[in-house]
Length: 316
Image 1: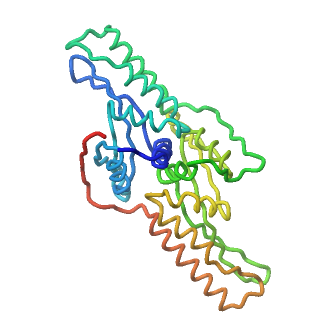
Image 2: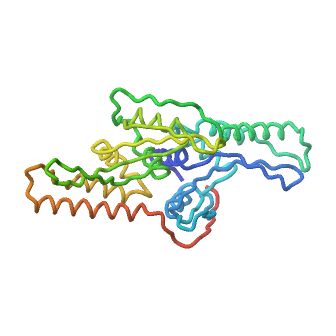
Image 3: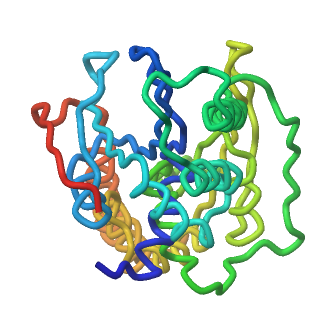
């Protein structure tokens, strides 16, 4: 099955944001077994079902650590099919290029080992070296000391497949929401202010800097209390710039298409309110914005999801 470049770019964004490219090591057998594994975790089962139908692989449920959180699921694909998929995705990838290079080297150079082969067999040593290299790339601790450089005139660029990649990042690690604030004037009048925001939070500084360079917005970093965890980087954009971005990525979104539609509706049908606006007009427009705000909150809730399911598919 031929997979189009837009779908590959979307998957690249999803892998960069919410995915993992790793090498698993099975020690239960006398001869340790190394296996390439590519996975994406999410709470939206339909999103992962779409990945399975397009790219093959498997879906399983994952443990929920807090009762009020939604159930989680993981899509994964392994071995040779995973290597072939990564080779196709690599041209569109931003953050996990190094992991993909190690994965492709692991698959392309792999030869069959004899039964009960010794630990010092050249092929075993090669696999173990690549396993350790992948472990180092996927380490959880440390900080790269990244300081983000904001472009002088950050704006949305017009690159081929930019919208598809951005949609994968936002579906994977992004949030689309309506922020509500209020402004109190000197005469005591209170005006409620609503604006659309898009944020992406990730431990990869490469993704955040890429967003700054190609979309604009702003970024910040914060260290976790645990020293073994990587620092968290956050990127955000709001207002008219966020609306422009949503218009670009909306056709490619799988998980957050409804949030995108609400954000575009907030700005697309809004009535501009001024000091001289009639009270009934202010009340009607405020009620419309409040309704969209409530719908957005409901879509972004963290409550329980559907029952746990497991499904399996042949590798593509």
